Structures are given as structure tokens and as C-alpha cells.
Amino acid sequence: MSNHSLSNNPAPTIEPDSDLRRVIENRAVTVGQASGNSVPDILHAVRQHLKMEVAFVSEFTNGRRVFRYVDSSWSQSPVQVGAGGPLEESYCQRVVDGRLPELITDAQANPTAAELEATFAVPVGAHMSVPIRLSDGSIYGTFCCFSRSADTSLNLRDLNLMRVFADLASKMIDRERVAHVRQNEVHERICRVLNSDALSMVFQPIYDLDRGAIGGFESLSRFSATPTRSPDLWFNDAHAVGLGVELELKAIERALQVMPQLADGLDLAVNASPETILDPRLEKLLTDTGGVDHVVLEITEHAAVERYEEIASRLKPYRDQGLQIAVDDAGAGYASFRHILNLEPDRIKLDMSLTRDIDIDPARRALAAALIHFSADTGSTLVAEGVETAAEAATLIELGVEKAQGYFLGRPMTLQHLLNSGCLQGVTLPAAARPSPLKSIR
View 1: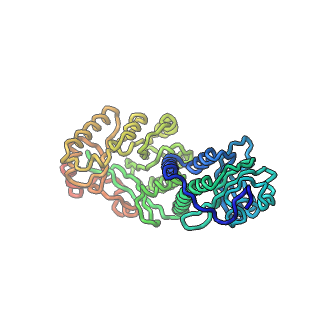
View 2 (view 1 turned 45 degrees about the vertical axis):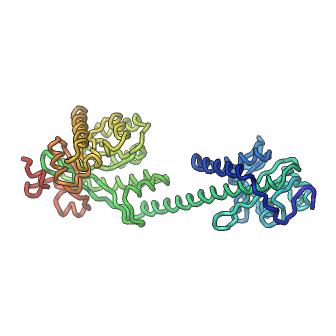
View 3 (view 1 turned 90 degrees about the vertical axis):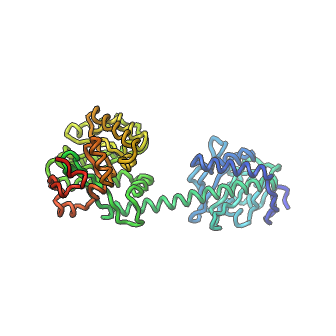
């Protein structure tokens, strides 16, 4: 056996101290939860611990060894992320197939390593490399570190520590690969929706409670694609893979196609996130509508928005032409109140969490009454969402809410259903045809 390398036979396993292993694993778990850069963090830790100059994770793909993660103390490291070369010309392949040992204290003194051009060109002195095996048993690549000078102090304990780090890295890579596969699946699913007729629109009536008549509609998305899931999950997935704006714009475009069929005085509400509002393509859709004086743009965002001034500036020309702005889900969280204060909406939509059981819950009635006073003082209109019972509708009328929507008042309908029912003509419903709480009006 050479004084400078371990034999090609499997090295006896010497486990690191249990305390050290527990510290490493706990640190890796913490890093993995806190940051997307968990593998680089492990590389940095092992390189410093072993006093090596370069540490990297390589992937074997299509006959090549590609560097996926690199940590180096060199100002001009010969190993760069994304670079690589033929697998057969690498240390990595020779370690995996057993031609080179996992631990080499002096590569230039090892006959097999000396045959490789990099050994003297880089040069390579001390070298450690451990295969990365994924959960399915396949070899992903290797977890490696090396220095330009030899280091005869490296031993089996160091090698087993490397194996621990490689095992932790493999778990993180496994998670990243699974997440990447899932993300690709979601991306493909959303693309199929965008390139098909799987997205359709339905329209829920919004009642003018004082007139007992339909005053407009909110357009709502429906998906015929698989898997069967609620619209909010489709939009959440679309935003997660960078296609949220595209999906929202498609829904808005389809909704606005009904505008020419609406009778005078009826409004159509469409939903848009701040990102979509700031997209120039929305401006084109609004311009092509031919008139926005009966369009209501509902801002759907449950998180804080930092670009209020830009949003207001982008919408001002259209608001001057009659476009109305609505803030959704008032009362559901702090973000909606920030939207109200910063955007001065024409409509404030009372979240269904406040509408639900408002007839029997004094706290909900008190908060709704406060929002009614606020909307009156600021010149906005309050719209109650999610009205599902006659008692809820009656309480909202008693409180002075001007507009409402919900399953009790009218379920979402397809365009054809609207055409057949005559709802698009905006006719005031006769008392006998109104939902019971509205019959007493007039």
C-alpha cells in the first residue's frame, strides 16, 4: 500500500463522534429550513473543517461531470459552477468505479491519479471524493474536496466525516430534485390551461339592495382541466411558477368579452393582482374594451404591497374614464386595510368571514357597521360577499349595506345561462321573484 493513498478496497467504517454527527445533522436541517443554499453551506463547512482549498458537488449527466455547487478559497478557482468535462477524464468517475480510492493524501504520488492531466495542470495534491447516492439508489455524482498541496494528516476519520456530509447533501439534493420535478409538472399543467379552452368564466350577480335589482356581475374563473381543484389553487400554482399574470390576463380577457352584451348601467367586476395591474398587457385589454366606465377592477392580494404609488399612477387614466377600483376581502386581514387606505377604492368588499352568521353575531355586526360608516365617510360603496341565508341578507339590509352577492342571492352562471335568463338586461326583479329579504323593498 502506498504511503500517499488508501487502497482501492473499501475502507473500514469509523463513525464520527455521535455528538459531532448530531451537530452536523442539526445544522444541516436548520440550514435546509432557513435557506435555499443548504448544499453550498455544507460545502463551505466541510472545506473549512478539512482545511481544503476547493469543495464541490458534481453531477453525472450525459457522459459528463458537471459542477453544480462549488466553494473555494481561490480567487481564480479552476472549478466553476456549470463547468465540467468528460466523465471518463475525471477523478469522480474513477472514485465511483473503484479505480481511485476515496481518500488520496497526495494525488501526484498515486499512479492512477498521475495519469490524469488535471493532477499536474491544476495541480491536485490532497483529494477526497465520496459518491452521492440518491434515495432511489442511483448515483447523482460526487461530493469532493481537494487542495493543491499534499496533506498526509488526512485519515479515515476525515473520510467518514465526508461521508456524513455527502449523505446530508444527498438528502437535500433529493428534496430539490423532487421540488423541481413538481414545479415542472405544475408549469406544464398551467401551460396546458393557457393553450386550451380549459379556463372558462362564470358570472355571479351583484345586487343593488336598495333597488332589489341586479346591478352587475363579478366574473369568476372555472377550470375543466385535471386535477379537479378550486380556482384559487390554480392561480396560486400559476403564480408559484411565474405564470400567474398570464393566467389572470387570460381570465380578464375572457370576462371582458361579455361587456358588449351587458345592458346600460350594469357593471362587470374582474379580478387582478398588483403584478397584473402593473403589466402593460392589462392596459391594452382595458383600452380594447372600448370603455371602462362599467368595469370594476378588484385587487386580489392578501399580502402587503409596496408599490401603491405605481399602481395608483398606472390606474389613474382609466379611473378618470370611469374605471372603478374595489378592494377584496375587507376585514379578513391587515393587508386589505392597507389597500383601502393607500388606493382609495370606489368599492370595499366585506369578506364573507364577516358576512357569515352576521345575523346572530354582535361582533360581526359591529365591525360591519364600522366599515359601513367608513365607506360612507370616504365616498366608497360597501359590497357584502358570501351571503348565504335570508337572515344574513336581512341583517345587511338593516345595517345599510348597499350591494351584496352570494349563493342566497344568485349563484355564478355561465354566459349562456345569463342570456337565457335575461339577467344581462338588468331588469328590476318583480317582488315575487326577489329573494325573500328583498321583497319588502319598495
